[in-house]
Length: 91
Image 1 (cartoon, rainbow, N blue to C red):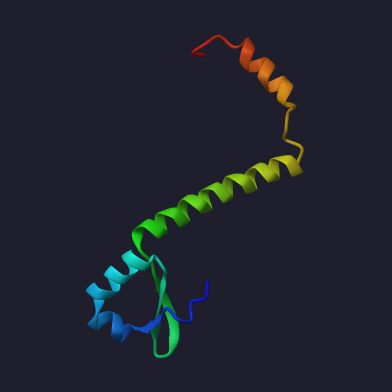
Image 2 (cartoon, rainbow, N blue to C red):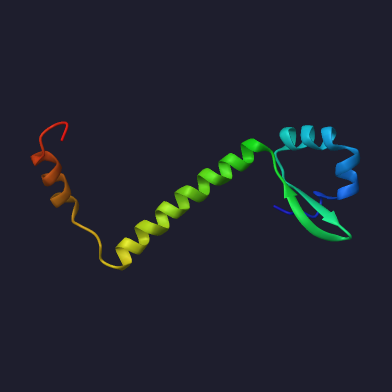
């Protein structure tokens, strides 16, 4: 996604906050806010933010799993299944 079309100065945000928030919720595209010509912040609707956080959490789990594989902290599936079957229900 190109953010170059979604760039506004902070003065625009100050003058049009309600409109900006409505646009963010509708379009679900982040908005880069500039101050003195430099990018200073990214504004994003809550739903997109939550999706991003969920995605990051899943990626972290995948990375942790890959670390386990890389360091040999794995067990064959058959061993795990046998152990689970041997445990009493509710244990």
